[in-house]
Image (cartoon, rainbow, N blue to C red; front, side):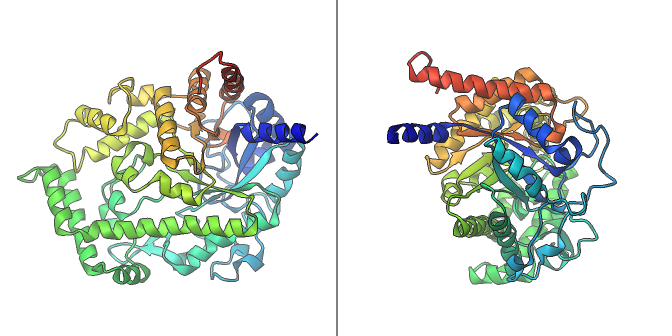
Length: 491
């Protein structure tokens, strides 16, 4: 009997996580039981990442650019608001002035999405995680956040909360502890896609305009933290103003005598405080993650905490340098590493255009991309700059990024690559097909990942692509079993 129980436990541990991100709108529009049936039968899904606290369209809602072959073919713009789609409990917010009990999402009245989903999921032996997103650009009627917003160079308020404010730190802990205490969930997936003033000034992402004069944060909390660490705060502000001037000059095509890159490096040598302040931002962001991890483990050490690692980490070497997998593994049970392939093509091309319009403006875009490919260890299989949006990134890219993450964490936490299932793209850009969905899912699992998370959200996904991901997951499990009998060299 003991031996049988041990085998059963080992089987459960060995099971790959086949997760999916899903918002309340799908359960409300299509019905909980019907949705879970589809997810299990077509997608082989065994883990739900329910978008529970968010004000952002990325992991929740149905904006209406296009509709899948399930659910309601109508945008939810008249209804969508955002907030907490579970029930916030006041007792958990006593240590912060940001009162979470005021943030119940009004979209579906008093409906508590976790109360609706958890019992049905448990009947199917599915795990349930609550996704929590540190959003920005909150609705105008949500005034509770405004006192805690970041401050830009001109002293105006930004649209996101400052990490260094004690009330903000306590708030994110409170949200996660509330959910882990009040509900029978398996843990938290925390999203935070904010890049810091240095990278934001350079537009060093894929989805932003270059607004170097609006970078944050220069509030009193940042001043005090900077001074405590020997950073000259006024010199940092002066450096960011100089950086803004450099960016604007570069965008106008007014080439410095020694070239764009040399002028950039000259500025950085003159104002090391620029990067020091960015490190302060990263420290505050990391502290939020560490706070949440410790707080959740204080509630239940068996509940898992994972973090979403944004796509820019995949193709921006500057950003990579600020995100050490080994360090993140110390405060996480799993990392959802974004390796989106279809939208990855246009996103990577956008990043190269941004980088090539400022610091590397002297380098032809095709050559810049080839150079960056070498830095990132991308294979020669990736498309050219001109063809990237239409071609997307390859399954080999997914495999390599999965391997990089696994080698980085050194077995200290799990890696669950986030896969692109119908993430919206431009009119002339790559659209997901069952063939590439199957190939990328298999590539992530072949790379040794402990599972995958189908992204961004079920309300965007075509069922044929969901089925292809499920088929790949089942095939991978079969291949792994056959490998143990020395029939395949798969893992």
